[in-house]
Length: 229
Image 1 (tube, helix red, strand yellow):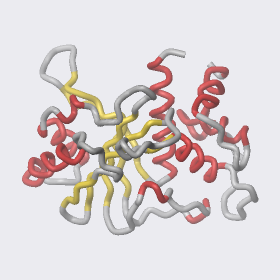
Image 2 (tube, one colour):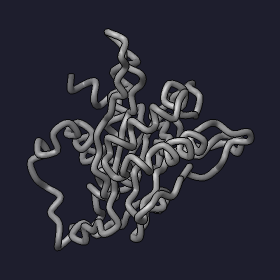
Image 3 (tube, rainbow, N blue to C red):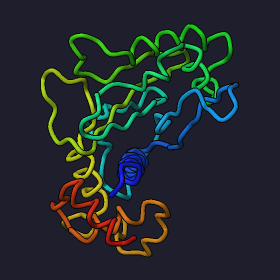
C-alpha cells in the first residue's frame, strides 16, 4: 500500500473521530502567488461550538480532547505517520502570515484581531524543548480558542519525551464506543445503510464488523480497506 493511500486513510480516520466529537471538519490550502505551487496545506481544520450535544448516542466527547462547554474551538490538525517527527508542518509555521490565512478563512476573527493572534498561534504550535505534554492552545476574543491537534494513528503509546498527540488506539476505541454499543440503545439505532457515512463508510464497516470492545489496530484497518479496493 503506497504512502499517499495510507495518509488519506489516516486523515479520514481523524476526521471521523472529530466529527463524532462534535466538530465540523474540512481541509484547507494556503495559496501561493507562485504558479503551480501552494504555500502549505492544513490536513484538517475543525470547529466545535460549546453547545454541541447528541444525547441520543449516549456517548460523551472523548475526555482526551478536553472539549469545552464555554468556548468555540478552532482546531488546526496535523496527521503524522510512524517515523515522521511529531511536530506541525514547518511550511505553516514559517510565517505568521500563513497562520493568519487560516484564521482569516475560518471567519471567527476580524482583521484587527488576526495578526496578533496569528503570532501567538505560531509560537504555540512551534516545537519546544522539552516537548509539551499538553494540547497547544491560544485563547482568543469572544470566548474562543485556537488549538493544535497533532495526530499519529500508527502510534499507540506516547513516550515522555514526545509532544502531546492523539494516538491510534484512543481514536479507534472512541469510534468503536460510538458505533458499537455492547447493549442496544433505545434512543439511537446502530443498524442502518452504512453508505450514509459517505467517505467514512470503509472505516465504519471495519468498526462494525469487529463489534463491541474490539476496535483492533490501524494496521488491521489498512488491511480491511485494501480488501475493499
